[in-house]
Length: 254
View (cartoon, helix red, strand yellow):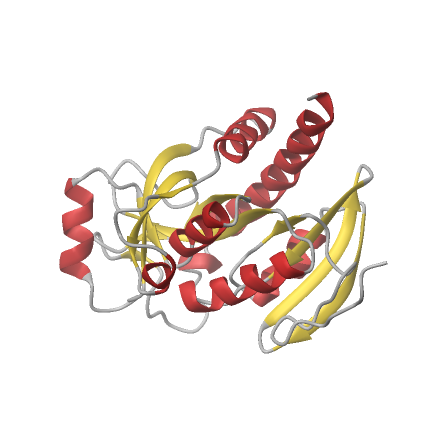
């Protein structure tokens, strides 16, 4: 019997989380995602790390918020790994960097540009931040089940939400699909630990076009409050859960 050892930031221990973990940034999104499981229960809520564990068709699945940015996401992943997590799927939001990627669309990341500081602590920049092939395949298969046509390709992970407009224009020219703030560290840490990770993201605007997430008047529904984005967040959660079921089925077939 493994000794229960509570982690200092997520406040979870051995047997509190499943080997499959969905990791949104927003703590309030955890309960929404968990509601799509057949059953779930709250495990911990500490320093913005909210964790639920449950089951879908008999498969154990946990949901844990990471907060904003790679430093916080790295803490969550490191501590989840210590108590048994093996596969991570970020279920988040992203800003489009291409005109053909629209608000309410879904992006599945094949890799992430490492424009963050955290992943550089783990590995030199020459080391690529690549999503796990099997996770990507399962996400794409699950999207087909839900009759969704996600964008698939490279995204940008950056530390700066504000003040990086010129950098965004640069990566737009390289064909990078969208920008967010966590995936590069998640992919890097998972790869170094020989674990699996992927990201599925709902598009909440386009910073290059000044559309979506930003200042708004009371009562306005922009960015994540837009109805199309809220629906995309719900859809990506369902897709991620079904991707886990595909991964579990495939693991038993080997």
